[in-house]
Length: 403
Ligand SMILES: Cc1ncc(COP(=O)(O)O)c(C=O)c1O
Image (cartoon, rainbow, N blue to C red; front, side, top):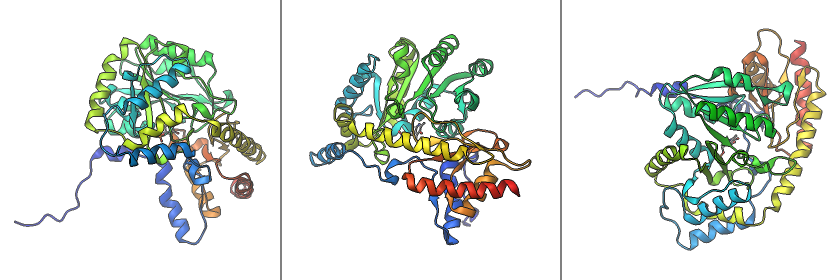
């Protein structure tokens, strides 16, 4: 038999799949190979910038491993973790039963499970523009379409409710709400959140409430969206990644709203969860430790973040040709550069990288238009380091816009 030597073909769905936050690292490596130090402001990982996981979480995982909890768990997660999540939602004004909670490999897996369970090929999901790119990546994988709704920098990056209403079709199945928001740092007021719930109710949509930064609003934790209407069709998400400083553990959770409208979705999600066996077992023990133990690290973290957010907006707004809305939570800002005609956000960001070694991600990686000149800055670095980075961005931008 002759041996076939042609390369193995890959699936077409991969061509639709992009993840700019990590893809751009290939460009950064080239810059490093050419001898320039790269300052990575592309990934929102607090642990890479000196913020450390609270010790009682590490002890809980260590103890779980030593106590022999190294096997598979129930696919929805261990009961004690689900009880802790349900009790935490209760405390935040959302009565929740552990039966409607799943422990997942980060928020990411929970979102993928829900989208896969709810959205058929050819159907669509409303996602904010700009968005955290996981949503568009998962939709590409399952053959569904994103419908980008506008969020407006002139209105503190709040969602344009009319744009959402205008876009809904019979094929629209879900509405993604990221609040506090990555990449904009926006926090939505209750009247906006209530309108979003009303839209979902009127059109039979499920809201995927991405609340991974809920405890990282600088003014203090934001109540879950589901607390505004306990019978709304909302699936709430969070994880240990950001507010508990353990992103590599891949430990997250989802709570499916108590409305019977979501019973079918809950069943479908659990069915899919069976297929992947379970999320990492020992890390599930840290969920209980996190939600029932000391959270004082969050107060320090929030004030460190607020200081960096103010520094970021003050410095960036002082650069001619740049504008930046002040973030109110999380560790991202989404400035806009007034690009010369014909230039794209990626042109600017790649030129910045090659000239200064500073790696940000261009806005079109989050769904904004390339000519609009948005880009995302992760401002977790120490304030002195950020000062030096913004000095370099100022010098570079002056030259770039003059050319
Ligand atoms: C808005 C948003 N959702 C979800 C995630 C994924 O988080 P996790 O580590 O819990 O999967 C991130 C990570 O950056 C995020 O910014």
